[in-house]
Length: 408
Ligand SMILES: *Cc1c(COP(=O)(O)O)cnc(C)c1O
Image (cartoon, rainbow, N blue to C red; front, side, top):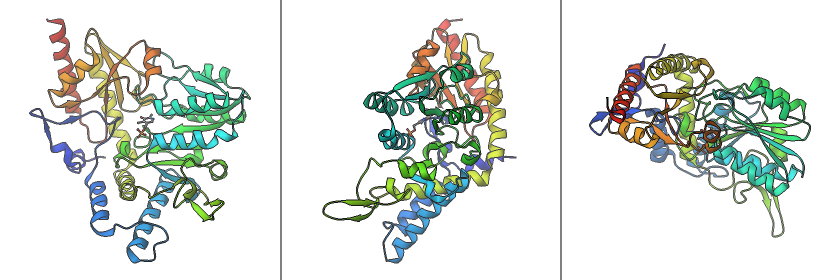
């Protein structure tokens, strides 16, 4: 069981007031708040351990290297990768996905196909569009059903031997719908296609086991998992990482440089050119440790019950339309909606006046909004520190907004 009061005390920002009201933070799918251990680990790194890593002979550099590499091993354990060499530090999900797309570009051929879904975040669409255009490949989109779930039947029809990549989100950042990867991945492999998983939303809410999933690549960011911005992870199967070309060249990623040529380092160093975001990696390690100590199981129990409660409360509001699966168990605690006759941005700004932070717009998923026939939605995305009382406040505020606009 989670001790919610203690959890909340661990996040200093939750003590803030916004426009005269205690902060209700429902914008976790954009970025989550950070607990003390993360803030402390980063400030402690700068205050007492800061030095550049690798090849340093002096003690501080040695300590910084140890701390940095210990986080790689923590990430490896966290997602159950086979080896530390399969964990690449990047600046975030976007860079991780770009590293895969542009790294495998040279292995792709005209006429081959890339499958995406209509629910992808722009960062899992745009790199593939660029690569597909360069290599004269075909892009296909697996359709999303009206309840936000993937159309599996259509997937099987779209998939054939020309597929080289299926790049797919583990969970939608708009509807929260969880992708049935255990069905998607084996089918793709049967056709000889690789599978790239965008775990930006799922990593702090669902246990991830890359060996059980058997995905080929997986990407996530630190900042949506209670860690810092500026750091992310790319997991890749060892032999596949070896076959990719890096797109960043410079220091730290080489074995030997002569006037004429360079021998590259092995993965993961091959992809970590330049000085790494050291304090951020340390902060990510603290965030994963915090998640492990809090217990993903406890977090899931709390968040599912909160999701169910939110769905019930929001369904009771006249004129409110929810997007995404009906069942709370089929989704992350991400709830997007539209309110009849009230523009999404007005909802967000009226909620902000009451201290409630939500997001409005297309949430970097314009294709999905087009499929829903809505240019914009309002999104309340929940996290471990949110409470039922906060959800009740949101529901009450939405009812008030609804009445205000329709004047009864
Ligand atoms: C946030 C997000 C991204 C991009 O993450 P960055 O941290 O901005 O690089 C990609 N995919 C999904 C599903 C996201 O929610």
